[in-house]
Length: 294
Image (cartoon, rainbow, N blue to C red; front, side, top):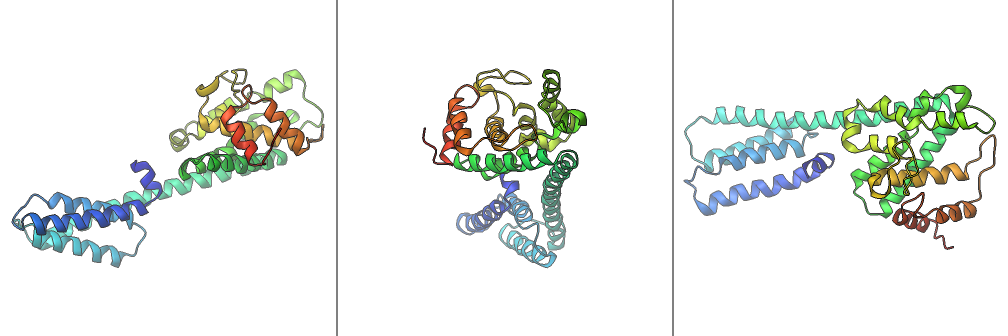
């Protein structure tokens, strides 16, 4: 739960409002002489720092001081108010620093995704355009499935990176104007594993599922895909979503050696492969985006 909260710090703000109100209320109703509520005020301070990490220093100090004064006068304990102020300011700024560090990592991962996408763009303009289209279609499918905002964002980012392994494919194959030979196609089929190897050491990509998209977006629902031959629900949901978006854009796009399908023919082909190449439920949701009827 808290990982989702870190992606949406406003939740910590709401939690702070509730926690601080409860702390004061309990003190006033239960017993002013009780010393058992001081931990609540420490929790208030942590929640405040996490929720208001991007506010000005004077605001952070002001609210932290209000928390300290409430704790000092409502929870009678030996000690000087200055020591309380120092302690609670320290807790607040540790919490602020923690949230800022998380947000920097999050921002950095997005910038890294864009940098990797641009690296792919420098080798193959078609692939870069393709990845952007795949990301947008996959995102629409995810939203239609009512997946969380965080998971929708991961699917979009994974769509941008799904072909990153093509960086490791020789240019004479990647940029070939004619149809690929069987050997060349087998080389192309290595790009999910190459892409996985390129980004597998980036911890956040492993945590949020982007690695699964890169490695498994060419698996088939019937188990005849690659590189692992996974079947059905063995394939991660986010990879199944990107797989259908990937196939759709590949079919409708013009290549140097062939013309792209019409939208109607493409949708019919996807409908035909429902339950074999594509997840049936995701296929129905995808087709609904176009109000497609056989």
